[in-house]
Image 1 (cartoon, one colour):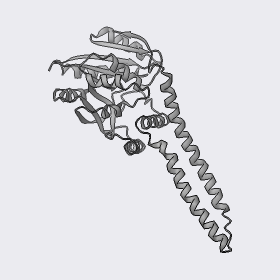
Image 2 (cartoon, helix red, strand yellow; image 1 turned 60 degrees about the vertical axis):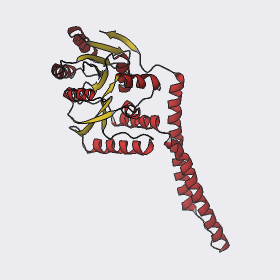
Image 3 (cartoon, helix red, strand yellow; image 1 turned 120 degrees about the vertical axis):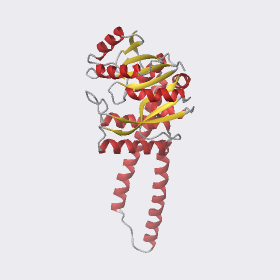
Image 4 (tube, helix red, strand yellow; image 1 turned 30 degrees about the vertical axis):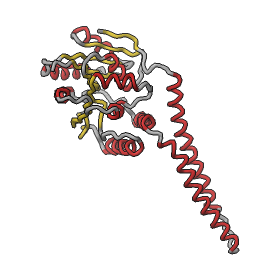
Length: 309
């Protein structure tokens, strides 16, 4: 077909693993000599020697570029920068920690030849996936699909391929700064395919996603796709209004029957529960206001320090 592919590699403090990643990627690209590839490394403000290693790879290899951020802006920003600078007919987003096996690119290229414009990689097993990770991941996708208007496939990863026109839609028609790309690319339509893969252990280094960071990332992902949590206040208000009405009727009946209802325990429990739920609802509203505030400010999603090509 003569397609050109852009491999976008997000890098953040991956000094030990970059040489291993490059070796595996080079082996894969040797199998795809009939196609043209460019490799775009996006250095997301690494504080180790990742930037230096990437620059050395770019100097020694043609069709490679390095985009260096001025600071850490996050994984979503790194993928977006790669998509905006990609020149290929298809863009492949992946991480450099080898949990997105470069060998899978062969299957992705095959799907491109079959006419698919969105190819998602779905983890059917992860070597580092303990019970906690499986439960939290499963819970997130269940909640996401229950709350959002669109449905996404469970266990999809940030390892995906999209055509040039899909990339243009994502980067130009969706200008929001809080993005959930793995969900976004499944919501734009076009001919889509999924490929299962096994995510191996990290070749070196440690995951940059702590449980706390994953929690807030999950909140932002849900908030960008659904406003249903904002209706929680209305639902709680109606529920408590109904319950209060029942308690009021009961109290009046007991009064006329000569059996006054003190209700001390009930009142204490209701007040405690009511205030707890009230602050939860206020917190949810505050999160949405925070996202709106970030959008209104219009600050850049990322800032490029330099590009090495």
